[in-house]
Image (tube, rainbow, N blue to C red; front, side, top):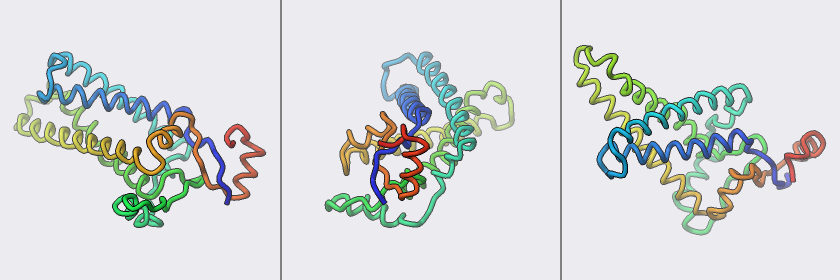
Length: 217
């Protein structure tokens, strides 16, 4: 195996990542405003911006899901127990004792086992919980006449808020992990340029040099 800088994050992935980040932050700011944590925006403006950002984010998620399945990139998020406990131990113990990260990126697996598991959880549990409850909440005017509608609304709103706070917790953890190891700058650079250090087999290296030279440095 040899280590080379390889383009592993496409333009769409980078666009998806940063657009998603901006929209999630917008949802956080407006959501906190709706719950009375600040008065930077009027309630009406917060509702309008929150709903608009949510619909844009939902559209991006839908397109990203289509992209993942049509390109085969969904395989990047398949969980595996191989190396999972080593990575979990590193983040809970080794990282505080100067140990080296036990996972090395490879061409066909750019996320370590813990990342893949976390991102899969986001995509199949947390994201659907947020957008499904958000849409039902947004359409309350169409079902407010149903029996016990107010009770259902309470639990839908509670679930939506709980999922949103879980998203905030994920974002804080994500930002914290960017500051450890190689440092914030080195962690962020791949999502700006698309290139990262990857372990390549001789066959993979030969293929990239011959068939996709722009993807390898």
